[in-house]
Image 1 (cartoon, rainbow, N blue to C red):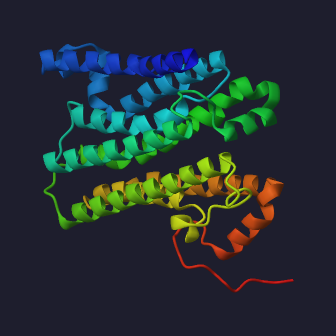
Image 2: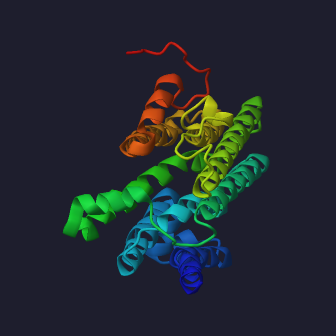
Length: 318
């Protein structure tokens, strides 16, 4: 209980430096609309470079501070829940910056969708961790720590935190565009909403089915121990939760694409490539678990990787 409360407090306090700095900047600006000519060089720079400011705040507050906290705690747990929270912070940042200009309805729709996506993913994280903050770090970080050995203390900064900045800032680029261009709503905004909602729903049902399966397995249910989840969405896809997550981010991209900013696909594309690598790591790990390697090999041969599809029954037999 003590560690849980401590980690909740750490997670709550961790983003305060960047939040307080940004609020100070807004306070200076709103008390003097001519801030760009009368304020210090720092406030001028913050005013004229919203995207660069987001990167600077991310670097010092997340990359550096989170990394230092992780070194003190010997655990890189905090970046996991903040993967779900940082996009919410970014969409509000882009919408509140003095240079922002946008269609009010598009902005609010995207903000609400981002909150729904975030709460869904945060709920799944806490449910998976038995509602304990910082219970453990991602197993991939633990494996990398073993690989790097004594070098992990500094290598973790480049292996964990810098990539998170690249991914999250890239993924948020459509949010930046939405708050930089004021155009009327079109039918493409409705398409974007439908794609986003579909992605959130698919990921929710997939993660819920996986959670229930894991609980049954941990409870010793003989129908799933040993075994592979092969019901619900998992009957049609080996990673429907990853598929839903990708659908969400491609839906966010459609908002920006519909306004003529197709270049923002770099975020969704990078995320898809990252999930392809993560998928390989997860499946390699499953195959190393001897008690279900055979069952998972068969599952691989019959079931689509991401996109839900019908089973393949044309199996190669020996």
